[in-house]
Length: 373
Image 1: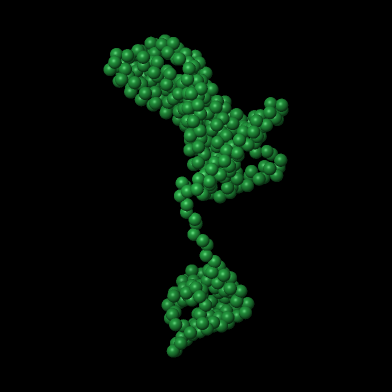
Image 2: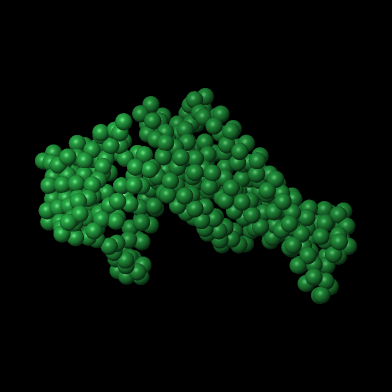
């Protein structure tokens, strides 16, 4: 026995074909793929000059069914339409939504006056927010020093493990390869001028003072900085950040300060580790390329690299770690609750962190240009 509430469509032949619809044209009645396919095919094959549309026998109509008719009409009402009064509102809403046209997005080049003003506005907004983040960190550190037993020790320990210990492998691999490459390239040039013994000086100064801290910072920024931004962004998407505020748990003390302290502790240790492995790679390459023994390399290294260079490298590690953590947290907290913003924020965080690290390294080079030589 056929269902009397099923949507039906009938066409009467004549000089002016008439179309009559009946049944329930609602989503639950149109859920059957076969029914939907048959109705669409019937509506698409209707003559364009259909004179009368009779929808008075339609017992139920929602936006899904009304949209089928609207598309068949060419997005405008036919001249002769018989419609039940209770269904008039549905078609009125479809007409109003079709009449609304969004203006095309205004495209202005970045070098225009408005483009430059928007860039300045965005940069100033990031700068003010970043300075506020540093101020909040200072207040949280003061609270932590006054009440150390209430501090987030578990979070700090966990972040040191994830950021520091788990990064030993990648930093060792990259450091060893950089040491080998630098040693091979320097050895070829020094051997040309008979300055083989100065290879220790070049490797020691370049790795301990510059390459070691910079390599470790770039790797940590790409590995851990992106992870921090993604973690905070996911917390924003899942509304965990709002829940923490409702429960009286401040973001700075529980989320930002532990990550900054963990990076401030982990980065100097990673710098020492990267320096040692890079020097080991340079030592192995020097043995193969120039025949310099490991004993000679280790004996000459303390004299070739004065002690202040080690302290400068460790100081760079602390500063780079704090900057990476602050930049990552800054962009993580600014992520909007949608997946597109999460991806963009994570990418921008990594790029900005690496840029800030290189700028800070340039400042170190200028400030300490006369130290350690």
